Length: 339
Ligand code: DAH
Image (cartoon, rainbow, N blue to C red):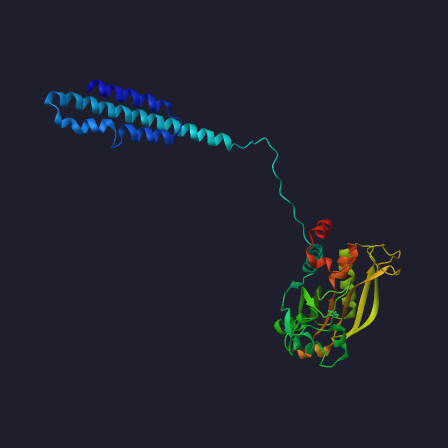
């Protein structure tokens, strides 16, 4: 019996030593220490031995079991460590390799122009406001002295949602909202998207405008011109020249349009400015007293002036963009060129 135990022990130790992975080691454990194993069989049969033999064989068998258990525990620890080392080796990162690098984004040319214009206006004391792109006929037309069937509506063919609700055709709707909300004196500027039933290479159903409105005592055309001159110098530099043409808008009286030195040719004349050396930048005017009154402002005490540049055209001209649609397509090839 003693010899048998020694054979089992040395066979077990040898097999444990030879194991190269945890799975085989577990099979060896089951073979030598499992319920079907020879060692357990010996322990189970102890009761059939004489008391002296039982004591001796019992303690030898228990020692053999303890030794095999120890060897298995040691081997398990060693194999686990090896496995971990192998994993770390295969997943190692070479920190001397160059990184992947992140792609750099850029602001859209419309956003850049927008930010620049807003900064100039805020520095001049304007408050930036925003308002609805879907509005009623009243705010977009009626309250701006453009009643139903007025011929001026032809210039701004609209996208209607119902007979009375439309996508705003101009940020001028914000003049009315501002006059209703604020107590004069005030200076507001509102950047925003506007919508018209227009679609060709220089017109898009969606485009962008600003609306600036000043309401105060004794302000008029002279103040409007001075302010626009200041803004143009900040936008395009001290040497910019400005040209004023008479115009017509039902909500301003008088109404004007302002041209500035063409930013492509610097005033020499080119195809973009059709040889004139100027390009149109602002529509503007002194607020029609009727418009002030309709929004509850006393036109005997207060007067106002307003201007509203379309920014897409300016961005197209300065960046030599041939078709307005490029501004809205989100084509990466175009956007990369605009960085
Ligand atoms: N809203 C007008 C348009 O889209 C432009 C305009 C004219 C704005 C005169 C103004 C203004 O603020 O005073 O055609």
